[in-house]
Length: 325
Image 1: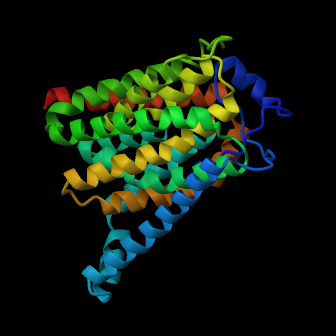
Image 2: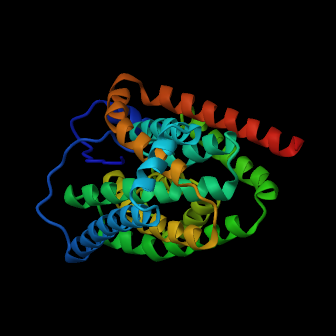
């Protein structure tokens, strides 16, 4: 899961991250208390997560008459889709835990490569991310990583952009839309790879158009299945915002963006993707400690190159398949 306790001091790896324009390595920090608005938002997240677990579990077993539910669970666990999603979720969370971004981009790229449509891939990733971003947001508020003003400026435009992107990707035929999504992911892969060789230079003045950035980031995140972190976080950090509070604020806002997008996908799509969703969640849970170890063992530049090349390769493969069909 995306649990980031950030501190910019005392870690030599942060010097490399600063040169590459990356978020700092995660370390515990102290925080005397949070703003009442943030505390209320945290309680909202907690209630939503608990309610979702109870509702989904109860609905699943009731609709399948209890014993039938256990039979379906057994079939799901033994199915190929579930374990493919577990591996995708595991790898995507390793990438996100090590780099601080690219969970959605990585997971969506792999799901498209396995034959999933853009709508199914994006919906599965967003529904699975409700749980990972929820825990992430709570952690950020607890450790003082959320700037209340920045969080509010990101929240509403990001949600609106997410709704627009979700509506677009569910209303357009998947076969026709897939080349555009693959091209978008290809550009993001090139962008990630470029950061290993062309560091971003921080400017003194903070960005003025946070709302427009959030609107665009929310749109491409829902339409492409990922991009909120690479688009919003990287832009804000490179524009002079404090990396610690920027990452915390962007990730806390991501829960509300993801929750809204997942609701739209659920209303507009009839495809049953629960094996994929559960697999992504389980894979992400098991990947969290491994991601921390990998982050310590490999240099940030090495990770950027590996991830960038991988996403570019997968996107080119998806483009070839889509255009050759």
